[in-house]
Length: 264
Image 1 (cartoon, rainbow, N blue to C red):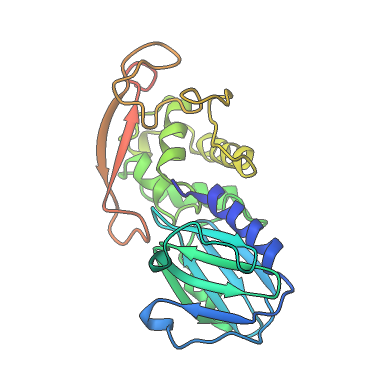
Image 2: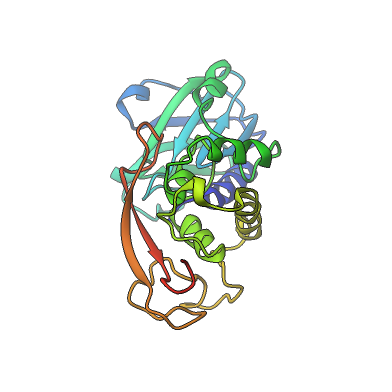
């Protein structure tokens, strides 16, 4: 499931392939940008901002969001595509590589001068160079009647967490995902652990929160409904939570997992 670490890794691959290179062909397969042609522009930089990815040229920014199914692939010129062509939303070619965005949930081409404003609602970026833990805590605390899992998923509070990290984070802090923010005793510790978890995984091919990088043992509770808790043996439970109105790019309902013994 794409989360901030997934986008961080995608940005690193695209940066290696595109940064400093001249675009020789671009193909935007979304109606709003179908006529845009960035051929002849050089890629200045590729950045991850929470779950958003920015590819900047001197005049434009290609802004994408993976949502649930999206991914970026980097291929050599002439290499066979790993997915059907109809799933491609963006194709960016240079003399030495082809970057393809498949099944992207969002694609738009912005004026370079406007790209910061497009992401102005995002909270502090957990993997960003300007990470601000105090601001993230302040934003979370401003919604005391919101379930903690919903608040952590709200990208306006802090940017980068998705459902996997939020469920694992709640387990590690011993908090039920439906506990209200105002009842969580140490928000600063929750935020600090979120930063440590996602930072530890930003360069890993498989996401690990248990410390055991082995299939079936990497996660404490996420996706393990009906299985025994890896810590105490109690059966993991599954439920659903709604979201705050206007909470950006998160779905209206999120599945949550918890151990009724470890999370009280």
